[in-house]
Structures are given as C-alpha cells and as structure tokens.
Amino acid sequence: MTSQPPTSAGPPPAPGPVDDLDCRILLLLLTEPGVGVLGASRRLGVARGTVQARLDRLQRRGVLRSMAPDVDPAALGFPVTAFCTLEIRQGKGHQPVVAHLASIPEVLEAHTITGSGDVLIRIVGRDNADLQRVIDDVVDDSHVIRASTVISLATRIDHRTIPLVESLLGEPDPAGAPTP
Image (tube, rainbow, N blue to C red; front, side, top):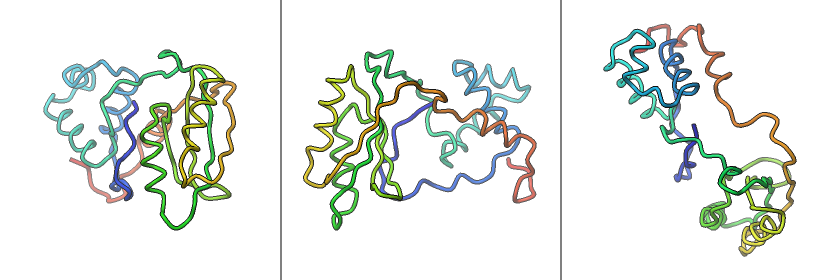
C-alpha cells in the first residue's frame, strides 16, 4: 500500500508498539488488499468492531498510512524510473525545492538525505527523452544547484513492508502490556 508523502515539514507521529493482532491485520491487508473489514474479522476470528477499531488506531498513529490502491507507474505508461540526488542552495531550507518538486507529477518521492546531496527523489518517465524533460523540470528551480541522476535498469526488490511486519510477530510489547 502506498500513500502520498506527508505534507508537513515535521516528523511523522511516533508509531508506538504493535501487537500480534495488529500485525496479523496488517499482513492480511497487505497480502489481500480487497479483503475488507468484515472479511478480515472472519479470517482472523475476531469481531468486526475490533478490526475496525484497530485499523482506526493504526491510522491515527501513522502506522497504516493509507487504504489506497497501489498503482504501478509502468502500467500507467511510465516504465522508466530514475533516482536524482539534488544539491540545493543553502539558506532557504528545503521547503521551496519541495514545493517545486510537488508540482511535477512524475516526481514520486522526495527525501532529505545526508551525504553529498541534500534531496533524493524518485522520478518516472515514458521513455528516456521524456525522462530528460522531467529532469529539466526538476532543475528548473533557482534553489537547485546541481542534480546527479541514475536510471534504474530493473527493480530487484520493490517497495515492501510485509517482511518487516512479519518480523514483529511474536515480539513482546515494549511497554509490557497488551495493546487494546
């Protein structure tokens, strides 16, 4: 499941611990996104209200960011993926660049980073010529000093969270108490 990046400049809320039932609900939704709340309650053997309350709590805490469908850019006609490291002009912060990047539909992600660059973005294009157009749009900002781009030849491990959630199953609650 994917979602739009947070719009606030601050960090996301601390997720806090999840228990085995939370993990089982998340895994079911990740592996079978169309199962729905009623289907999940039946599959997991818990009340529908329990599943709904857990989902609401997981969303409030920022653990579950979205119930939106996962859309494949390549299937939409954007098969070329690239990653760009941007160096930005110091003194104005990241917000002017982030606002500019948010206006470009082909910019799928933007992360502030450590190292030689300041911002790492993932972009897509219809082909290499279209990718060049997107890169030109990205650097057409007075706050961007330099861009270094690498084109992805193949995705070997796609964005995933299932193994991470599975790794939490059976872990003790750090607070030592069951999570409602």
